[in-house]
Image (cartoon, rainbow, N blue to C red):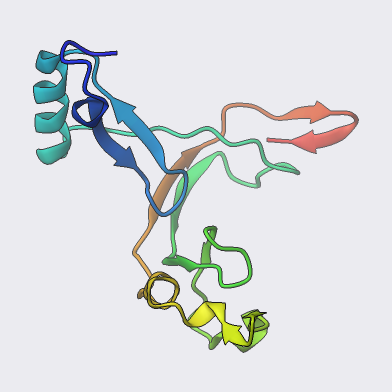
Length: 135
């Protein structure tokens, strides 16, 4: 808990809402103020680690490709190739004769414009897992 025992006061920020949705909580009123200020002023830096199948050809670089909602697998994202979604068309599901994909919130979420996304990467090591190359 936190000093006020009010769960609503504990939540500070939801990181990467469109992807992971990790929630940050404060345990004291001072921490709440400091964390809110850090997020507001964009002082918070995030670092991710990934395990990839295969070995990367380069040791570091950047990936600068826009992301958009994956219509086949919401809430996941995918790289926007700039092509129409014909290859990513989803079957319209029906519930009691009603198209559930036409719910206003679903359409709004699914039809958002692609978001710019810049990822800087650095390969830490080349390994083998169960005989398969991983990076």
